[in-house]
Image (cartoon, rainbow over all chains, first blue to last red; front, top):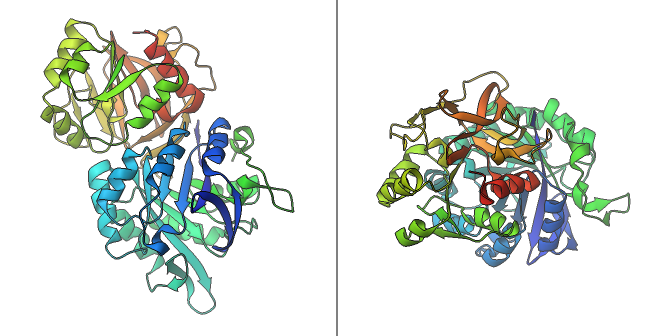
Length: 251
Length: 204
């Protein structure tokens, strides 16, 4: 039986792991290599690791750290953050990641990177990411630069453009729901899922197994990603890496 | 020593990483002498079928690998597109495959509610439970798949593991000392470990 993927989404700041709320208020949650080792031991379906400062700082990904992380991963792993050229994609793939996650608004020419990467490694290796916010007057907006700048990109149109450029998957980050653990925005997921025929990974808002299930069944996501749910425990958000494949297999 | 054939198609480190974890040395190589001396061969494959076929031919290694496999009986495992390449052709492209198996590679049909690629974990069936390559894999065995095209072997090729995504397809195929898997054992936790252990320990 085919099972929808449940993907811990981990955020890198410097060489540490953090978790944000609404893309802000980053809290340190531990050592990334150690965390990834635990997720691997717990047989997580897949991992996504995003360097949340690489673009902002205009620097290269931390290749050595990524290589160390990938070496612990007995499941697929995608990396995102600061990717602007095919040379970087090649180096990342050589470092041991299966997929690169490219936020298409992060830099000029990123559509080009998506196309180049897909031509070199296949579209299954390229994930097109979007950060989305709700606004009072204009509805959903695609955000740029770690969700600090609003763009005029149209939601569905942009997702289709990502797929046309070569993205084999869409990673939807809901900025307003990030870290809230209050559930997914199912309408948003549905709009993206209906606009493309490649898998859509929904991220932002997961707090319970039911939430994950809703994103799949009602939202139409092919896979779900979550941060807080897999790194925090209890109402005081104590750090505890957790992932239970048996509990998640029924979604 | 296991040689992982390097022909410029992406992430091969994961395969050697998994082999190291189960206690087997491997080398990622395009060196003819190393390939000539290897106990076993792994043929990986990622991306477009035609690109993989053109790249492997461009290395000039195909006649050597064919000698190793057909004349010397060296076990070979194809992974993902590496498994598809064992067949005669793929609907993904126009390049002929290696043609070692009477097998075609077909695209998943467009169907409501069925997204292509088939990406993620899927359980497998074991039509040949006694085959040494599937030893130790229970009914809960599942593997990580990423593919838009599937293996469609003729009767002369044995389906070692089956799977279903919209339609039933072969997840692992074998004939003599050659086998191919559509999934990624190097990224499939303990199930992948077990499968690669079976191959590395000499099941073929």
